[in-house]
Image (cartoon, rainbow, N blue to C red; front, side, top):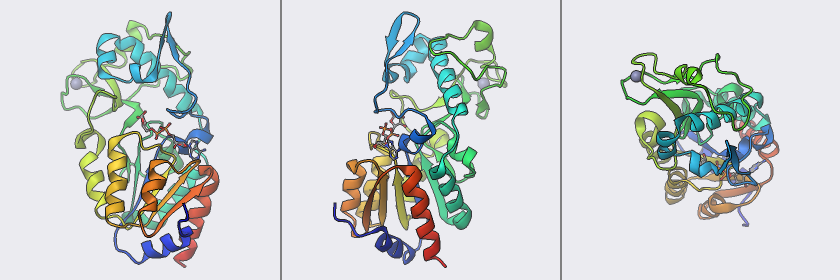
Length: 278
Ligand code: APR
Ligand code: ZN
């Protein structure tokens, strides 16, 4: 796609009023060692049965086999906690520091790496949740609760938590069972848990949309990019391949696709953005 260099997108964005909106997906965490979703992901074995992520990441699976589903999330929690934020995560934290109130990071990632890199929880909208937290299944009004440290981080793949370990994941307020604070494939976005309405409103105000490492397989991120394209918002896409976001960027007069690894492209882009402001 012969899009103008990001320089044109950066200049056009600077001429517009509105926030910088960054949208990230699993690709930004790939170089931290966290598998993406549609990459070469293996099957997940629990007991004697293979499951595919899409089978386990559902409310139906949690209702039927809650301990097994918790085992999968506790396993992924260990992988995410063992991973470190990479240069792309750190560059976005630098970008927020430089733009504070005019910056929002919308992430599909549940790994928590943006927060560990230094982005603020106020301006990091985790539209698919965060697997280091759980919610009350009785919706008693309790706030999200952290998965307790008493549950070991080194969680063997396929291990099913004991009844005692599951009891550690009960709501501190009412004692009902807890569920991972993540959006499942058979559930819908909402504002209360996932900031869905705010994210769409933000797309209508953005001066710049930066999309990093996502395949566009989910509806809300795609809608955000479509609204940006309708508003001719300068859109920069960083990914190994253009994909649907690269195609949408191509519809914007100031769209740019930067092919390459997030940990290389994002720091260079943030540097270019910040030096354009001096
Ligand atoms: N640098 C930049 N981009 C990368 C890198 C990298 N090092 N490695 C992979 N990518 C890109 C891939 O090219 C792809 O576009 O990251 C994207 C990963 O796509 P997915 O695996 O589909 O992950 P994501 O888009 O985040 O999935 C969205 O779907 O399964 C649900 O809830 C889950 O949040 C997830 C959502
Ligand atoms: Zn409760």
